[in-house]
Length: 195
Length: 126
Image (cartoon, rainbow over all chains, first blue to last red; front, side, top):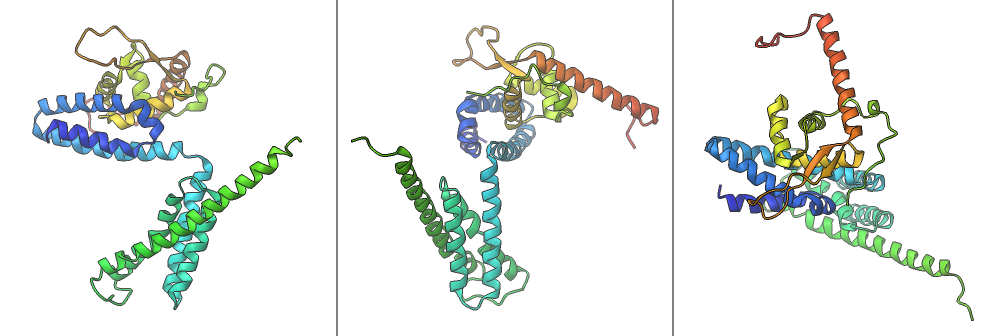
């Protein structure tokens, strides 16, 4: 691979790390990546290819580890709760006769998650929404559901759009409510204005 | 800015056992300060297998916070690099943790030898 392109891709891949980590180590990481790649290329193209593969696997594992260790406990709990809500919505969708029931679960659970964690509320929306289309595709692949109208996989993947829309709406409504509550609390905390 | 834990009062044993990456980095720094790529090469040469840049700096970040290593000025570099490299060195606490881990490994090895499980150099493990 072209060294410049390889470095640019690696620099892009570093976005998987948290912002704080990137601010401290991006230059060093890119420098070490370049030095090790240069030595690997000297050892031959097979060694260079193996190096590239190893570096990307290393980036995926170390960035995941770094992200998890930089998360606070509230974020981890909310992320797990979002996954549970997504699985609940999927279960409801597979058992309910009307789609409104699933939408209601999406809206209510995302709203509550938005209230609990207003910062980066889109993350809860994504974590709630992805499970239904994934389960639909899996169910079709395992022949547990009837064929859909249109393309069997794309039509099921398209469920992600309304699911994500409902979850984003719920999560940001929750975040807004939380901010409004915080604003009102802030006024009352300030106490009476002296005359 | 990395927030460093005050390490002086802590027992090294509280951090044991060390992960292979942390042990390899501490061993690499045992004979003096090094920059990132030199640590990576030394860790690979020590038999711990090749270490990627992400693992190296992820581990160094956690070790800085734990007070095992510290950044150092390093030797003055003459040309070649437009930006200065970062150098790392063992702290006193890092040295104590490394010694405690080596002692723990020696005890494990002694136990394995008593059970006749040790493998002679060159022999293939069962």
